[in-house]
Structures are given as C-alpha cells and as structure tokens.
Length: 358
Image 1 (cartoon, rainbow, N blue to C red):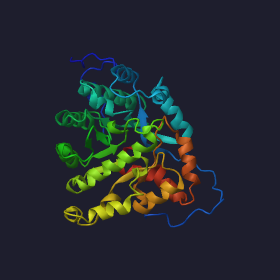
Image 2 (cartoon, rainbow, N blue to C red):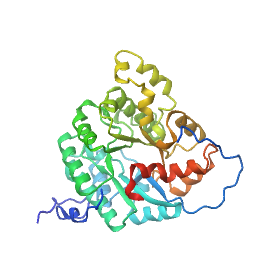
Image 3 (cartoon, rainbow, N blue to C red):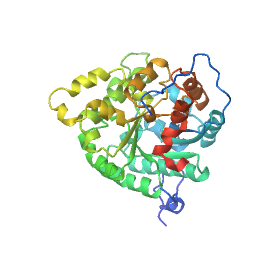
Image 4 (tube, rainbow, N blue to C red):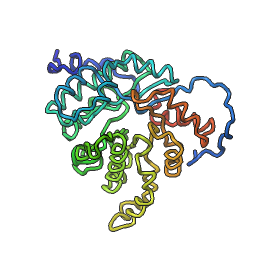
C-alpha cells in the first residue's frame, strides 16, 4: 500500500484511505420589516449556524510554516494559533450555536511559496477529511490547493471533490502579482465551472504592502483592499461572466467593494467593458456571496445590503480571531435584521449552497 511521502506537516495516511470513508452523497435585497429599536426577542432555540469562515491550523503545518521563514513573522497570529486542535473549534461552535463549520487553512499563501506545495496541500486536505470523519455533520472544508501550479491544482480538485467530498475550493485573493481572476488560472475555472463548484476566497496582505505603514498590521487595511482587487480581477478579467456556473464566496463583507460600488460601475462603462457585462456589473456583483466576519458594524452591513441581496449573505466568524457567540450577538444587534433575516444569514442561505448540512 502506497504511503504519502514523509512530512512533518500531518500524520501519514495511506493513499486512498479516505476514499473508503467518502460521503455517500455528495429574499429580498433588504428585509421588509426592521426590528423595532429596543424590542426584545423571545428566547429561541439554537440557530444551528453554518460558519463558512473558520480556520484550521494543523500543528505540523504550523511548524513547517514557521520553520520555512517564507512569510514575514507575525507574533500575534503565531500566538493565536499555538496549540490549536479541532476540539477548540468544536468548543467555540457549541458555545455559539454553530452546527457546522466549513473550514479553510490559515495563511494559505504560505503553501504557494513552498517548493513542496503539492504534498503540503494534500496532507492538509487529509487532515481536514479526518476532522469530518471524526465529527460527522460538524465540519466541511474548502479544499486547500497547491496554487499557483495549475496542473497540480486540477489534480487536487479531482481528489478533494470526488474522493474526499469537500464543499468547494479555497483560492486566496492573490499570489504575488496574480490575483484571483488572473488569466493563467482559466483552466482551473474551466474545471470548476464544469462542476458548478464553489470558490471561497480569503484575503491576505500582498507581499508588496508588507509594513507599508509601520505599526499598522496588514489585516487592518490590506486584507479588505486585496479582496477588492480580487473581485475586480474576476469581474474585469471576464472570469465571472465566462464561467457563470462557478459560485464565489468573498470574505469580510466583500472588502471595500460596497464602498467602491460607484467606481466599479463607472469603470464598467469604459472601453470594452460594456461587452463583458451585458446585464451590467451590478448584476454580476449580486451573483456573488458574501460572509460577514469582521463586517458587522452598521456602516459595513448597510453598504453590503445595498449591493448584495440578503439571500447571498452568509454567516462567518473568522475563528479563532473571533467566535460564533460574539458574531451572533453583533448580528442580532443590527436593527436592519428581523428574525427571518437572521435565520437566513445564520443558516438558511448556506443550506442552499451546502444542502448536506440539513
């Protein structure tokens, strides 16, 4: 029996092991009625949330990442993930009323910089599959891909979706100077379009912006800015319209795009862009999905809900940076959501994308 090459990232798993345990089966723009200010809601049963923004950090993977020194040091992040294990995630989920978390790796761009990216991506995916096996109905995973190696990504997509039965793929906002909609990635989108697959995109600080403003972490500004660059590349590069069966989920309420909406509309009217958007660029933006982690204040939610339909807004925590209990509390405090809207964001909208969690 073949065994994966030795690596300190994750425990060795026989090749094809998870094939035996693969799963058997693969509103309006704003709510019509606003909750009255100060109105008390009756106690409700657990919202059984589905969290689409939840990070895992396999211990071996973290060790390899830190030893490689391929990314700038980040003491806060390293402290946050030190000692992580699936039990901690489950504890947070249970406390916050979360039924299921669809996970993604922390700091996924590290893999793209590593010479053994193919092996590392596979072992991370095997780790996530073991979490699913050990805790049925509690976890999904957006497959970790060995970006930007296109051929290797195509092979991993096949294994991750057909054998491990994952819920979609994780493609970061950018890899060096290639953003999400880069034309080099067209073969990946052709395959994902054929499968009507889901792409979850998480941002990071692009390499050119590191320490751009000393003392200001990249997550403060650059994460949301890179999400906006990624969305622009998918739109203006024609990926969204050419591969219309691919469903995109963007983190943090779409970054700064809701604020920049008029600028996107104006750009779409110039040059050859009107041919790319026969139904208008807003039509394409409304097709995307947006999760709400770290976009829970009224300014962000107001702007997002003026751009995106309510039924395309998803619950996300960004665990372990934030927890489900606090995210749920802040959602419930937003005056624009009635009970039906909260139920849709907490669970209903995600079930349409991931019906296996019913």
